[in-house]
Figure 1 (cartoon, rainbow, N blue to C red):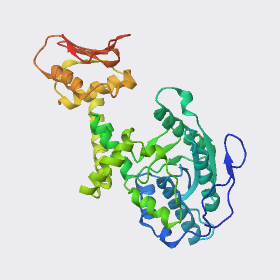
Figure 2 (figure 1 turned 45 degrees about the horizontal axis):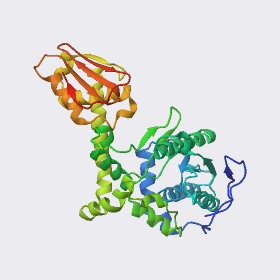
Figure 3 (figure 1 turned 180 degrees about the horizontal axis):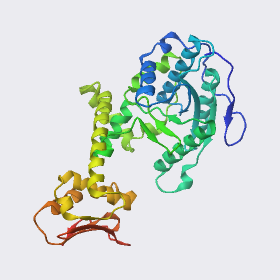
Figure 4 (figure 1 turned 180 degrees about the vertical axis):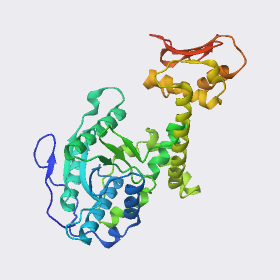
Amino acid sequence: MTGEAHPVFDEKSGRAAKPGAPEVSGRLPLAVRRHRLVAEIDRRLRTRCGLPAAAPLVLGVSGGADSVALMLACVVLRDRAAGKRVGRKPIVEPIVVHVNHHLREEADADAEFVAELCRASSLPFHLEHVRPWEAGGNLEAAARDMRYEALKRSALKVGAGCVAVGHHGEDQLETMLIALCRGAGLEGLSGMAWSRPLDERVRLIRPMLAARKCDCEDLCRAAGIMWREDPTNRDIDQARARLRREVLPALEALWPDAPRRASSTGDLLAVARQALSERIEEAFGAAANRGWGRARLAGLPLPVVAAGLRRAAVDEVPDISDELGQRQLLSAAEHITCDDRRPKRFDWPGGLILHVTSRQVELLRCAGGNGNDEDGS
């Protein structure tokens, strides 16, 4: 990799970060520049992710094989355009951001590793610090939320409209399996989106959702880089780690292209989810609505009624998602669409009560509700 190194900046201290351990110098090998993953990322950035040409692009790089592969591919794309014509703007102008969560002893070494890769690659580098334990509650969720907030903050500082992360096909398959086993609706089953807003100014994009993890590792090896490993990824007490270690190898032994096929299925389910959302919007109105005419709902298919009720319940109590099961929703939907006109009450988690009369369906929230899962008359 050639060119003058950009400054490596620590957002916390305002000082240059210390160099790390990787030895990377000179132009990237031909095997890297011609690697199939580079071509795939190039295509997905333009088609699925809608990245404008010559736009600054923030890369969230943890130091793992997936995010390092994403970084290498973007370096190739940057250098490829620059080499074709003097003064030509590259398709991407990558800017690396590493978020230090301070949750592991190796966290500082991970940051130094990424910083040194950026020096060798002539990439701008920003280091963000977050401390998720200070938020309380679920540590993993707090770390994720703070990480995306830090990436968005960095994007706004450098004028980037997109933040790219290295989620790949196996990550997508894991997400869909977890959603399936939790009884999620189409929103969960469709998996991670290629692009979604972080806010009205910045989008999160995932250009590797159809790529294989082995391709990420192969690209790193071709560049002579040994990536960083997060030991928590091997903790089988965590659902994702156990899926990754015990379930995915069995699935891929039966269907070697399962991650890529899961990504394609996710695309189809996302289209179905959009169609369902439009149907729900037409029948139920805005998500904030809590009352509907029974006759209007009675003519709808059961899954549409159940999905509409779920949308209203989650809008009222956002953290109810995992507690409100499909059995409860379908039980209510069946009564709404049946010929029995007697009033009925359904007690749901989060203190929610669904009242169904001969003419009206109404969702109420009772402060201090008992969270009873059963429905009663």
